[in-house]
Length: 198
Image (tube, rainbow, N blue to C red; front, side, top):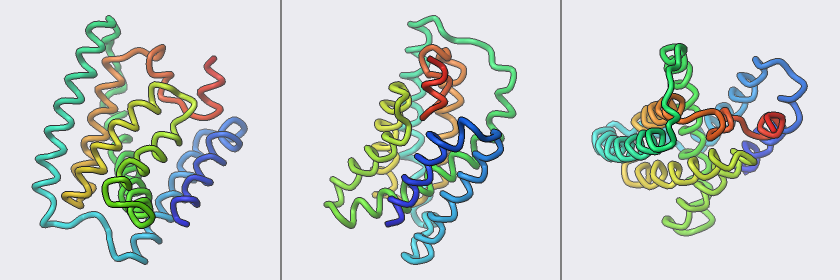
């Protein structure tokens, strides 16, 4: 139920509201998603910040982030798309809470809902697929978020703390922003906004 509410909210925003509304409405949609996630956390008692899991989560996330960042950096070097981004510091400030909200929804809602209806392992794949689908029709983001969500969800399943995962999410997004061009990433747009670019 909670996953369905988040999917409906995101699809409504990205396909119907966003093309006609000012950009600040993204914050409203994000707040609704976080609110749904908080409701799920309050019901389950799982808040995704287990202190005992922090160090393991941090170690696993650091390994994945380093490998993924290296792969993105090499791709950017091979494609010749590395470039300056004067707004990188401001991007980082915005990306941390944005990534935390997404990880909270992915792990507390999508992963746990998927594991409730499938096996523990299958739930990781279902959650990653649902998360990736919300990034359509952008092929780069759909593929990248599927791979990343598989790793993040597998890490969370072993070490349930979203804080290192949010940091990983933010760092990898920053690497994408400087290593790859808008032609490759579709300016990280989803839904109708991605189609408007083409």
